[in-house]
Length: 518
Picture 1 (cartoon, rainbow, N blue to C red):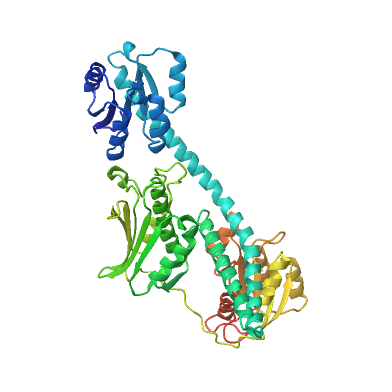
Picture 2 (cartoon, one colour):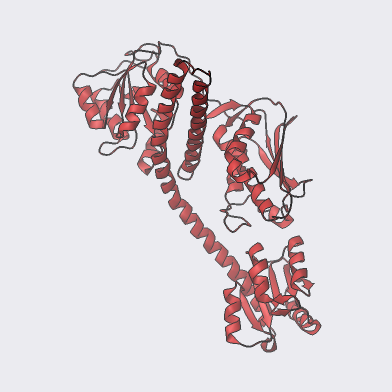
């Protein structure tokens, strides 16, 4: 039985008093709450205010037919099972109704005592079975897309790293060059470089989010001002909200908190995009989004509210469930993932009705999130003159990294075997930067071979990766203590990791590690 031990909520759309009474009598056999409507317009108005388990719909109504209902209203409520009732016995009509989305079709004159009840139960269960099948299919596609996403991220991050390195070199040249006669030429070029760098940082953020489809992010935590995160989210969400909604900001000065920056910005982006999509369902209504940031006794509160249609009470209970969505093109994962991210910060998301007419989502974050920020390493040694080996199968990537390390002596090799041969021949780098995914000998295999050939160099190997796109690579990263730097990265990020790995004196073992027996 559907909705076991619960009252079935049925909308009966019937303009004939006798047929309506017959339907009511037939449904007395089940625990059902029946709401009556005599036209398509009244049925649509009820659906906007109330939630139903099934619709019993007369084929012919004063303001249209069942097909009109299925074609128009059905788009707004795609998850609502419908049973059509009619006195017309044409087989072609039955096929047409089912093709338009009805779950069943009954002839009024031939209804037996149990037919209507059985049809309602069948319609609900069949519809739920379809939803479950769709969810399972979607889950399988997400699992497959996880591997695809990791591969896409890897391919995107390599050219992004090259561009970032080249832009940094261009910026250095601009800083050192004199301005033009009017004093604006270099400033103009510098502005263009800044815009390109911001765009690349956005690519990096998006590829990190793609990576979450295939791996559990460990997160890099930092202390940040919530207002800066909101502004970053607004910039990234601009293609979805630009020239469509009036956005009003009220951002108080608050304490900084420790966050997973990319993940939390993603939460705010999701709320902004959801707000815009909700308002898009009312094309003739004004579109307004208000964002408020304030510090309360319990912590930080960020509220995003809109002027859309709001959230039905029955949907509010399921809104944060995976795969639950009321849109035809939604995955039903955005709010579920957002809730998980906020919970990882010891926070919560609350939903209420907005004074603008739509929904208001409030993200509550404590001042102490329990996350530990990544240390900012101090350079204990000179920032120049190291011998650094770069191993990557892409020439442009090798050149880009070499430009970032222009204060050091850099040797590049296209593969692990060439690097091992150079080390075997007496080459002794202070640091090794090695791509994780390469043809032939992978980065993981390289460090294992290096541990036997030159054991003192293995701890000074830094893996650079655009995304661990194989299961073996992901497992290696999770279990290895070797430093991992994800593409694209800036020169300052690269130099900081190099300094941390090298320590105060090149070539000496750390004090708390016993010398190698060799």
